[in-house]
Amino acid sequence: MKRVVILFVFFWTASVITYGQTEKFGTWIELEFRKDFLEWFAFSLTPEIRLQDQFKPDEYLLQGQLSFEPLSFVKFAAAYRIDTEVKDRGNVTYTRFAFDTHLKKDIDRFEIAFRGRYTNFSEANENLSEKFLRPRVKVEYNIKGNKIRPFASSELFYNSTKKEKQKLRYDIGFTRKLGGPHRVGLYYRLHDFYSDKSSVNILGIEYRMRF
Image 1 (cartoon, helix red, strand yellow):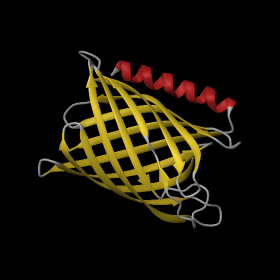
Image 2 (cartoon, one colour):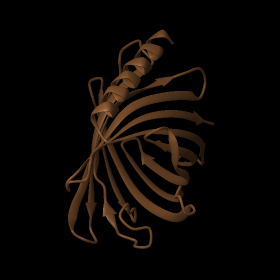
Image 3 (cartoon, one colour):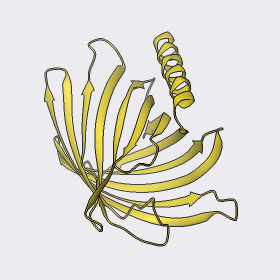
């Protein structure tokens, strides 16, 4: 637990320093509750709150996901999300869907994972449903004799409707297994846009429970 506290302080300090150098800083808090059933299937429910700048609520999200894992190295998933954005003139609620394909391979103590995602996610206009392709590469390291798993990932947001790259998402962080089905995580995330839009720095906090 002491190591977790040290890592949390490190990420928090780095995020505060970054916030002083950029225009945008967010804190995302996510909970996931997952239930496995029928050997190959799992259903998860994930509520999330996203805070922006002065830790003001910016978005509330609720996602349900059904996944199918026929083999140890491949998984398919479909998700449906309700997203509420906090606006001065009244909140805006809209829905999104996503279809994923996950592939992974272990190399020594590293786990290399690729995820392809097709979604109607759109940041530019709530009333316009744009289609996105979001390939992501993630590397995790299994430290021998340690419950902490550090990771790093990179994800591209490609707008297939406009046929243009819009942003890159970089993550670096760790997860830690607690007693029983519980796991916590902490990460630093950077949204780097292809346009002249300012980068967004994010501190993410996760809690996951698997039944």
